[in-house]
Length: 298
Image 1: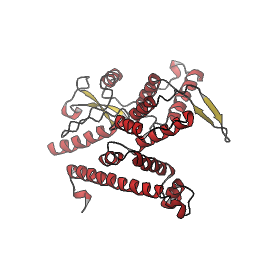
Image 2: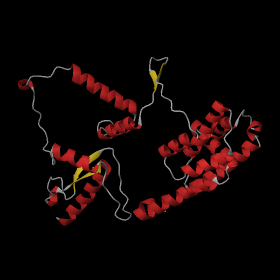
Image 3: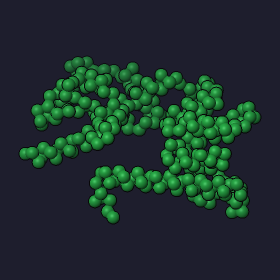
Image 4: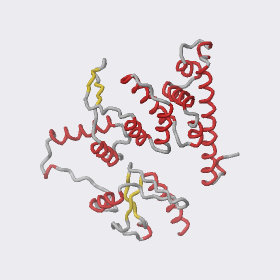
């Protein structure tokens, strides 16, 4: 079967079916790891522990191996985890959050987290995203908020920095990164800090030329004024594209562009009323669709 012959609905159903099978296979893998762990078979295979066996003997990366160990061991304590993994309600990274927090609690209080407590927490994080799960886990175990800022100078003179920022500041940084996404393609905060720092240094130290010395560059006339663009971005805030069949909105906040709802070739005006925010990918898709329509209509 050629995937190129499938329409978008058939491809959508195919990937969902494959993912469901992948989750079923993951459940089987976790059950197998659980059995190997309980019987300590990794020792007979020549490995000192389960982690080394999964990394060196099976071929998992370190992170993948640890997440599967966490899930397999939680599966021994909370059998209902298997159903949640198969349904996709719980992901491996959520399981690792619970297991890591339980280890931290034991290290600091010498109190072992019970299977009942883990099951209760598992129910609370079901169908939640990673950030929501982090908050639930921290709240459930009443984990202390780490306020101290630490700096460690490394061998190559780089500095490893650990700090705590408020949710308000984190939201501001994320918004700023989204607004700069056309300039800084990654969401790495180090790239963002370097860009902002360079801009501040340049702004505060460079000597600006006199007006008569400035060179006026030839600029392409933009379809929207800067004022209109800012108004529309502040109004929409994210990509407004919606799937016609499901109504699902994209909502992406990166690589945003202001688009004509009614295209200029169809006499669309460059006004706020005729403007919408689309991410670059959906804007390009709309352009390709409209280009084909325009070609057919001429």
